[in-house]
Amino acid sequence: MKLTLHHINLSTEDVERMDDFYRDILCLEVPVHDLPQLEKKKGYAGAVAIVSDGAIQTHLAQRDIHAGFKTGHIVNPVSHGHIAYRTDDLDGFKAHLEAQGVPYSDWGNAAVAGWHQIFFYDPDGNVIEVHQAD
Image (cartoon, rainbow, N blue to C red; front, side, top):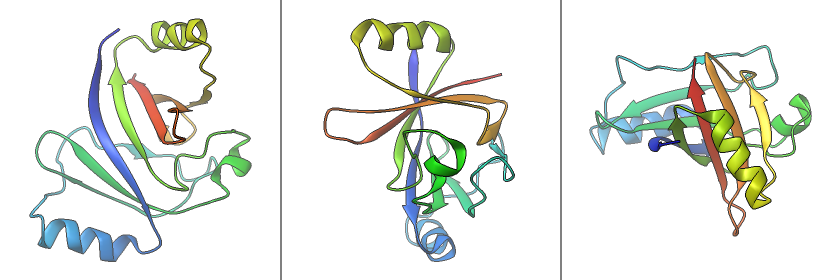
């Protein structure tokens, strides 16, 4: 059950402004592989721009404080952003969280086609995503 940092999600009111900043000022580029296929009709339809340093992606997502309500999930990953890890054993990781008494919200592939995502909070209330690519 290995975890690797996959992306950082920053929520914003102005995706275009953030995209310009990260591309022009930090010289990040749009990745050419491993791009998420967003499921715009399953609860979150906000704009998203994606940049990368070649290893780690940064997802610049339109803030939606109601995404959790729209999808029936407790954890809302696009109200204040999140950090995301990829695993090759999501079921094992979910069992680990359950054994540790950590509640999580299982979004399945409601936001990204081909990614099974779960979200949970760290002790300070920061949202963490763990997903497995199908």
